[in-house]
Length: 164
Image (cartoon, rainbow, N blue to C red; front, side):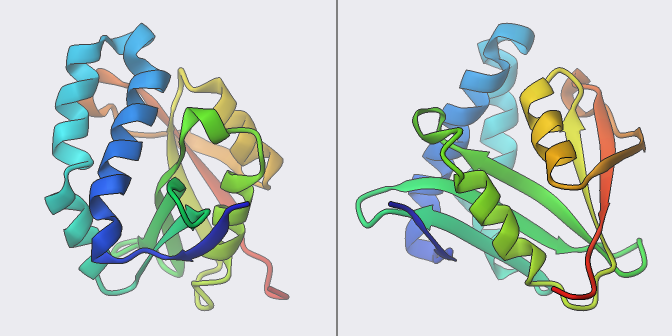
C-alpha cells in the first residue's frame, strides 16, 4: 500500500529513475527512445528535480510503500496566471498504474494551494490515458499548449473547489 508524503532530497535518485522509466514506457513508441532520453536527461535529472524541490510556492510529493517510490507529483503557483497552480508532473511507474496512486497524489496537491482558484496542466496530445485521467478529475481543455521537443500538447484546467 502506497502513502503520499512530501518528497525529500534523498528521494531524488529514485524519482529520476521513475520519471525515466515512465517516460520511456509512455513515449518511446511515438517519439523514439533517443528523443525521450534527451528530454528525460534535461527535465528529469536529479539536478532539475532538486531545483523543483527547493522552489518556493511549490509542492513535491511521492507515493511510497516503504520499499520504493511508485509515483510522484510536482506543482507550483504560476508566476504569470492569477491564482493558478500549475501541475508540472504527475507520473506513476507502469507496474503500479490504475491502482489509484495518481488519484491520491493529485488529491494531495489539490489541497496544497489554498489561494489557487484553478489548476492547469499541459498534456501531450498523444497521451490519451493522461487526458482521460485529467478529464475524469474535473479538467477541461482550454486550448493548445506548447510544442516542446516536437510533442504537441493540450492545456487543461480545473476550477478548484472552495470547499476543499
